[in-house]
Length: 107
Length: 447
Image (cartoon, rainbow over all chains, first blue to last red; front, top):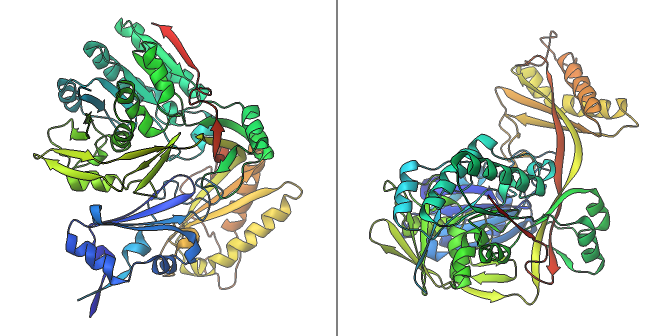
């Protein structure tokens, strides 16, 4: 068993505000088999994503595998409200790197 | 119901669309042009300050093209969340542009403006009556927070826009509106299934972001009794099942349930079907009306005035000592300005400037970009504190220093820049209302 980075398997890994108090991450695959590989790997779960960002699992507000869209969606509570003191990413659009660097075991 | 086509020219009014795409879109006989012009996404500044998100120049240029196209075809033009946040001053500013356009182009039209400002006292009564609930803020809305709020709006649903259509409006300039309601209003007014119309609105509101290649450009949706069909205006783009279903996830948390004013949409039974090369057919959205009608409040308060200094650091000894230096300088500044409270933030690009506490990569940087940020009750104080820190940092001595002539490479003189007032969100809560239209007065004007 080897492992590959998520960025090498998924076509899109993105982050974005979902309102001022959440950041939502989407993992999108063009290919059904790649989506199922990620979905069924056990490597991308609320617990592992929380760990990749140094968060506790309670900071993950939701997690969805969306078969209709070959997509996995993870949403976290923003460390601070959008635009509050110390904001570093107003649109939340540059928070995807730890996620795309996660390792997924591949056959 | 005969099919109704909605043309959405772009994802945010002012961010552009192709002339060819608009012309081709108009040739498909849309019944309405509807577009969104704002959201909370650019941050609390536009709500708090009332300043426009997009320049008057760009808004006027695009409104001119849309209103002329709408008048030539005899169809209404609906714009929601005008000015960026949909506040009263932003409605007034956009309405003034419409009057200019009508005058300059000799257009006769009925203009409707719909305000969405919520009187603070109205919201305080609702808080007192236990009719306000948290949406996602994580804290309850309080009377104190409302007293500090400088701008408070609520997201309207489609109902106030339908009221303006009832009155015969040709151009509707709406304050803060739920993005999908702006697009859904006309089809619902004509009798379309609200579930389908709102789902279509949710996809169309970003313009051709749901097409491939994606862009700020024209997108059309045609709704009938059983579903709707999406198609980009430009022949150079296509809608695909992949582009549309991926877009259904964008900027939102729950892909299967979508709450809105007075309703919740269930998307679990949706299906997407490719029609030819460029169209996608969508069916299956279901709507449940909520027991009570809630609108989402959005409020902003003044957090203070900000000054910043931007500098680069190249010396590895300074970079190695940086965390300690910044802590020391911050503590010294806070003490220096007692009893005036100041807020000091450092954005350390090359270390964790983008991700802050979420950053897990500790690799040392070759070069660091430093933004020193101070917020205080007065601009002068923020400026004084910012310079106190940037000046102290420039000449700060630390153990192991090899170059004592200066620690910071400033790109600018003056080194300290005044940013002006800073706002933060003070309300993001749901408020119960008696009727969908009570808070959103429609004003009509013949131009």
